[in-house]
Image 1 (cartoon, rainbow, N blue to C red):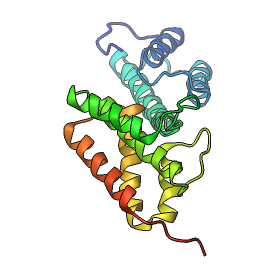
Image 2: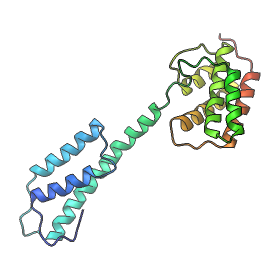
Image 3: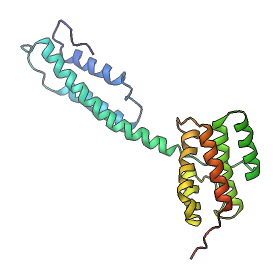
Image 4: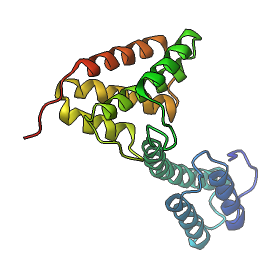
Length: 207
């Protein structure tokens, strides 16, 4: 939006400026709530009583700029939680429904990836091995569609001493597999230690 225009913008010009600002913003995503907000702002801008032409161009430009900033701040507040919710929803199933590999096979896949420096694959396969091992030992029941967080929570009830480590492992898995986290050798080592600790742990008997 320009503030050095030499003329006083009329209602249509001001509406065009704000519409361009909103639609070109990084916050103009296609979520329904944000779309309603933008449409409301444009309709409100179209229907308000504009000041007479005695207001100077810079003054009116400042008023429009303030309106745009307020709407964009609200848009950010709306879009931020929406994006966050979408990222959290990215915690999809930890084990593919058609993945019939054993925990030992997943560990070998993780070892091979680690040997090649493919830390993302190593981390993902390592945590999957942890979950598969929990299923094989009947600490948790196999359940299609279970997320990493759900697996950690279910296993943590039977292995309370490992609950915190399982949650950390689930966070790492989600961040690497569905987020922007970059896996490292240290992450693989942490999951390797978690795998060993979980395998050595004895589950508590449910009351």
